Length: 112
Length: 115
Image 1 (tube, one colour):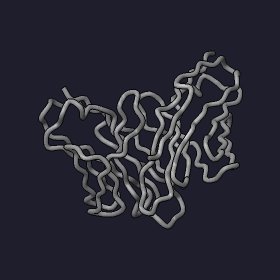
Image 2 (spheres, one colour):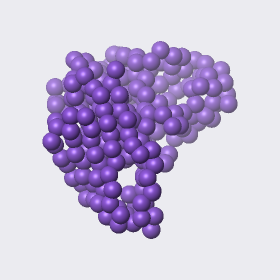
Image 3 (cartoon, chains in turn cyan, blue):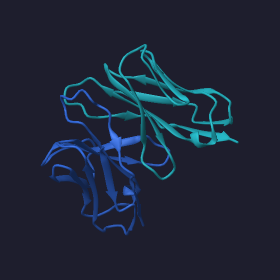
Image 4 (cartoon, chains in turn green, orange):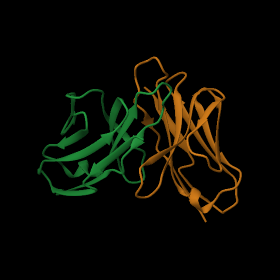
């Protein structure tokens, strides 16, 4: 069974203090690993899709990386508006498989 | 560009009452559509998905059902709500198979409270 574990559960940083969020996964053949940002009371907002080990993608202060067992979301010099819950999900390569397996998220708070 | 809508945004219903949540997508054709539920402290759980009109697959047996009467419309229903049906319901879409685009995009969600 596919599994996703995110750590830490919660992270508080000072504005400008860089850090990384971890997503460890177990999947029977990876089709894709997905990062989303979710604000309270809203639907998840897509950030990145990673397909293979060694791949990296960047968007503003965020950079996502992927290995065969985990993914990291690096946040550089964060601002208060980066405060949100960050979700990681995986999809396995099975014909007809539509399921995304999600972790429970990391709640990130950036203190001004 | 594509847009996904859900309504209502918030719903308070008594136990045993029926439910109908609606999701529509604009700006794309023949999307794959999904219903997820998010409970507090838990990851998103896939409930149903559809690859075309009238085609529904269920991931979790329960008292909910889904229908897809039109290409870009997806409906989540229940005949009798349970307390355990409370949660945040999210609709999502992705490009159809064969496009090489597996990313799912989520709507704004419906907060359901069953009392």
